[in-house]
Length: 391
Ligand code: KIV
Ligand code: ZN
Image (cartoon, rainbow, N blue to C red):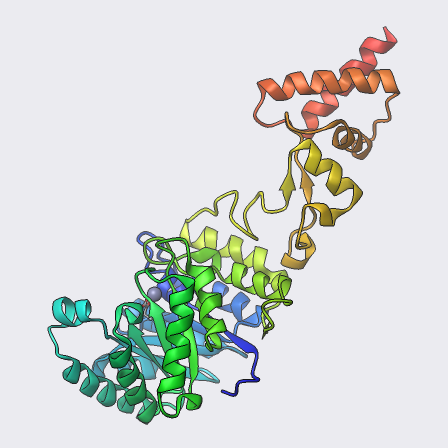
């Protein structure tokens, strides 16, 4: 990687880390459909599953690899020969396959999860990255729980992985513990200190336990990372992973302060979000950034008035850019006269000043009683108004 390379590789792990959300498992058919849209939208790397986890996962990764067109297809493997070999078998069908292998590096994981010393883990890294590189050229190595790993030891681990041929180095915030400044600094330090760090692309992988996953991902990029691991709708373990749609739109919308490019076509974002919500059974919250039902909806009178004059008053992105047909001005008790008049026009009604005044008052009364005021409610109300006026 060179310093002037501002291209961000988008690595989607909806089908692996996303599926690890309790209750989010997906069928082979659903996974193939999701991989298809990810490939179409320009995702650079699709992590299709964890081939050793089950025969179903192996089949999913193999089938996605066979159907892949432009995206690199990655599979996950623990630092165990059997995992790595199985992963190599699954991804070999892809035009471009990747083995993604990982091991924990933090003191708490070494002590309680692995019962291994630092030196033993270094040997494991050397052994397993070499094994993976003997199967495939594209090898990603991850330091699980990197953000709780002392920097000197983390640098030694990264150095070993690069020496054995890892071409991507991922430093995950596995438990969503880091703050943006810390995460940025970790990348800057590792990249500056590890010999030959320019031989690998550095990658961020952030969990959302403190709601910082997207901010941390962008901070990691500021520290020198050029791959972002993320999921559609932020699906993932516990509080989830960084949301792909938020990252893509942050980069597109704030190019003035985030001077990076990525290949993802945002027009696919809404469709992908709906597909993943349906397949995983995890509904998207109404106020979710970019893809929530309310992301381009306005109810307050002041906002609706502004929107009718110029959409940029209250929208920083155009709904069409992310695959939403249009902004919606929701008629409710906060709506103002301007939006009400506009809605009547849309429904084919033109009222005189007095009738409009009266209809608006009745609409407000109705909105006070009803949570949702539908077009049919407004039609009934106006027809009633016209009938009363002509009696
Ligand atoms: O969160 C994490 O550390 C992971 C690794 C397997 C990359 O998902
Ligand atoms: Zn993860």
